[in-house]
Image 1 (cartoon, helix red, strand yellow):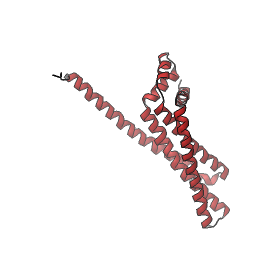
Image 2 (cartoon, helix red, strand yellow):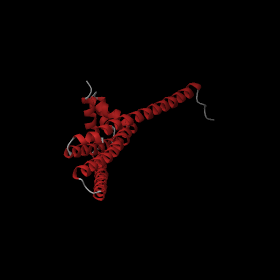
Image 3 (cartoon, one colour):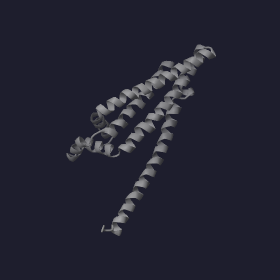
Image 4 (tube, one colour):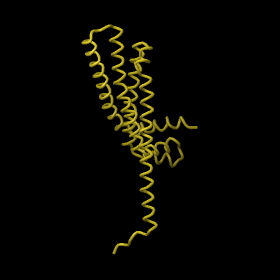
Length: 196
């Protein structure tokens, strides 16, 4: 006959479920707010009004930076989700801050990869498409192109942005899986650099 769990054990399990649910709800709200504010900042920085004030070359550099940001964060998100925690546990045991931060990243892989892939990566993809369309619009106005030429220019530019983003992320995924330990260690070092 199986022994029934004690009331104290049942209470502990209920508290654990309650705390986990509370933590998940808090993360969803945090992710929503982060997405909202990051998108607002990036959209404002790449709006038609801002891009009108700077040369096309500078607009193109901003576009490349946004695409690169999305690819880099996609790499970090996948590396954290696939990295082996063992080498970082031994670093953390020796009280190395980089090891402790790496262990924290891997233990919170679900949230870290959600932030990197879903929040930063997806926002960068959306904003880069809008920025490409705005650049194409500026080219259309400055060069006084026909409507048909402007349509094909916008189509070609947005398709190129999409191809570069998808191709970059495909290469990045391979790098993230092969070098996950190094990527997590570097990310942990960067995070430690921002802390006193």
